[in-house]
Amino acid sequence: MDSKTKKLALIGAAVVAVGAGVTLALQAFNENLVFFFSPTQVAAKEAPTGRTFRLGGVVEPGSVKRQADGVTVTFGITDTAKIVPVQYKGILPDLFAEGQGVVAQGKLDEQGVFCASEVLAKHDENYMPPEAAKALEDAHKAGVAKKQAEQAQAAKS
Picture 1 (cartoon, rainbow, N blue to C red):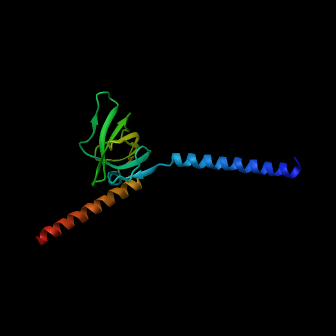
Picture 2: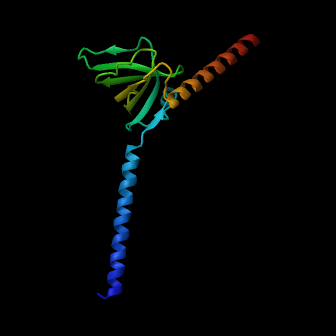
């Protein structure tokens, strides 16, 4: 091999190595990317099945049920329009309570139950994650608009 061929081979090997590194970095980034969905979006089948995402809203009052094993808890997360059943195995945060804001991270199974691997409760009286607050606001506006349309229709009848 002459020096020109060696130089080209070295440049080609460097390009392949850099390309492989970039590909691995992008793949790792894509696998660790976690999106947020509201219960309305989950009910509309916009959330991926079998892939990790975050679900946020308010813990539905009266929905918290503790299993006999002492660590499994089921509850519902709502945005006032839709409710998604959640199953969590572990110790819940101290601030977790019915009617309080919550964000859970996990996967949706084939039956439509969200299997949470992590549950995050709000940390003070005024805080709610921006995504969850927007989802609740949007659901509330849609519910108010629907109710007004129903009342207008009933008034016409």
